Image (cartoon, rainbow, N blue to C red):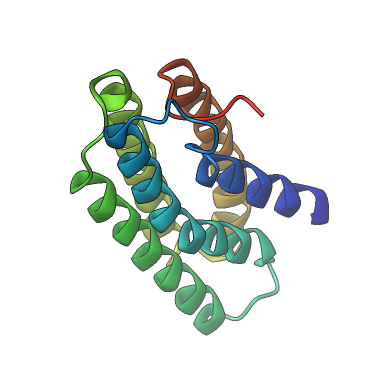
Length: 147
């Protein structure tokens, strides 16, 4: 489980770095700053979800997933209010869509018991794969550095 959690945090952190080494234009730099604002709480939320195990109390599950939902919603709100450069608009929308999907998975897992936690962990891995692809879209759009 430690490697999966580390992978989750690394993928979200890589997304947060989107903008380091960008094109240097004002619009791209401003969008990169917006990405860096929304991603740290998201990384914390993903890490907390990855730390849950089937032995966690229902109270702990609901608290952790509720906090994660709030962080994800804050990221969605921030991205919806952002002003991505034209070349990054599709990636921004893909990120919002991925976050909405992850938020739905969090909500479904809150009342589902131990099996739901394991399902959520698998969905978290899928979410991380989506984030990696979106980060590449940002690199291709010139918003993110390739490193």
